[in-house]
Length: 125
Image 1 (tube, helix red, strand yellow):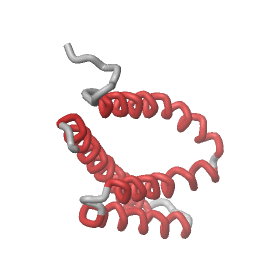
Image 2 (cartoon, rainbow, N blue to C red; image 1 turned 180 degrees about the vertical axis):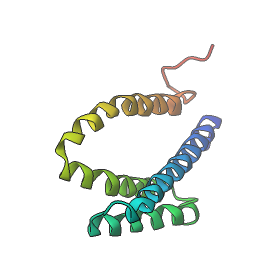
Image 3 (tube, rainbow, N blue to C red; image 1 turned 135 degrees about the vertical axis):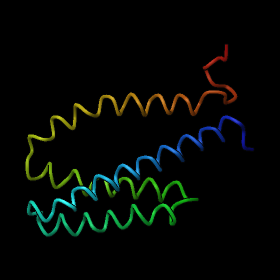
Image 4 (tube, rainbow, N blue to C red; image 1 turned 45 degrees about the horizontal axis):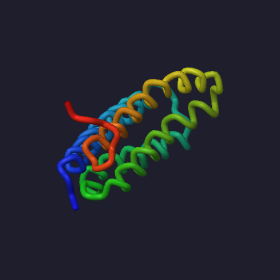
């Protein structure tokens, strides 16, 4: 049974994942546009092209499948972060610091998703 709370959570997840895919596409596109100015290693270039193609295609491929959207977002993010961290390990510390607001945001989204469900701890005023 679909409740109003689960439908609103689905909308939050849908729009936030599409916003994230737009941001990822712009970041990867910007990085690829600078490939003519600064040399990008061949493996990074191939992974970035695949990630950009997947992110752009996901607007059509994964429009009804949440898990596909999440896997495409995870792959595109990994193709941008892992090569950087493997080449320059010192960049791991700022990324770990950035996990704090990400964790707070995920916690808030999970709390919002549970609000209004039967048996939840949250009470409406």
